[in-house]
Amino acid sequence: MTLATDVKAHVKLYDLHPPIDDFRAEALTGLMKQQKTISPKFLYDKSGAELFDAICTLDEYYLTRTEMAILQTYAHDIADLISDSVLIEFGSGSSQKIRILLDAIPRLQTYIALDISKQHLQESCLNLAEAYPLLETIAVCTDYTQPIDFPNIPSIDKKRKVGFFPGSSIGNLEPEAAIEFLKQTGQLLGPRGGLLIGVDLKKDRTILEPAYDDRQGISAAFALNLLTRMNRELGTDFNVDAFTYRAFYNPVGRIEMYIVSLIDQVVHLDDVEIPFWKGETLRTEYSYKYSLEEFRDLARAAGLQPNQVWTDPEQLFSVHYLSVDGGK
Ligand SMILES: C[S@@+](CC[C@H](N)C(=O)[O-])C[C@H]1O[C@@H](n2cnc3c(N)ncnc32)[C@H](O)[C@@H]1O
Image (cartoon, rainbow, N blue to C red; front, side, top):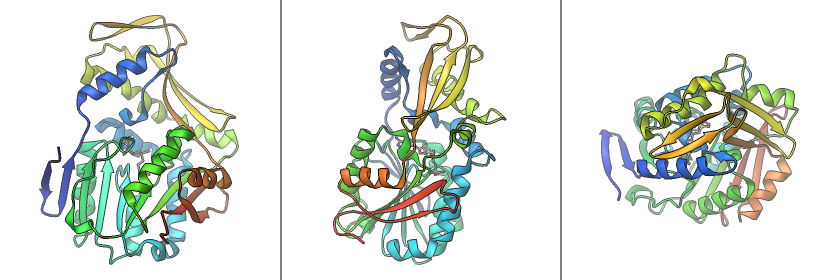
């Protein structure tokens, strides 16, 4: 069901948020697996979203500043490709990077932010709408990995649609799932559409690993916050102090992030007992890294056409523009 509410005169919120039972069911299934796993989409409650914003400002976390610098440097080239469209951002978070595009395309009329973290989405869209009062800002709280039952929004009906998927969040999906996501996104954007997507590049592990396990322990706090969230929302009894965090580069081409049990212990979810032995891991995230050609191949496998790509001088990060079906 679609519920549209005017949060403020110029932000419309469509709440398609998955019910709490989905979190319970996914957590239970993930915790019963041999390799315990919980999807990174559950990392972003209010505290998680704040901790992620703090990570983005860390020296070690080169991704945000590098991607923003690429967007700024090539804003006019990008504007040429996307200026006549409705922009749809996947995983909009604090809606900061979109401002670079909005500043380069003052005549852009409509921005649609999709995010699973409702409160953060609402606050970010309100801030954006205040800064860009002429922009039609629409917030859709949804899980973008599921087929999106996109609300009927008359003002975007016949318009060209361009997706914006920054932050290298595509790397959280395993390659097969990334292809499925890109296919689904191509269908959602429709003919003549495009997708502007930030993708982290392969590089030395001495740069990669500190980005995901910083000296101040913010990445660790971000991952461990998942346990606090489960205790609060699902009634689990994780003793957060009895777990730690680990991240490392696996040469198959991805950073792997885990919560690690410091002792033998048993955690409860409803009446289910979940044993952890000392050293056992709960995987919270993968972050795949792609060379330029590997990512272009992935896009082609999803039926999207690699069009332009921009990188920074040190080749740390890439921003690709992919065309959907005859789009520019
Ligand atoms: C890594 S942050 C990136 C935020 C921002 N786009 C950036 O580049 O800095 C991921 C964002 O996507 C949202 N998110 C994660 N998984 C999601 C999903 N499956 N569906 C919708 N939003 C999701 C999170 O709430 C968070 O705001």
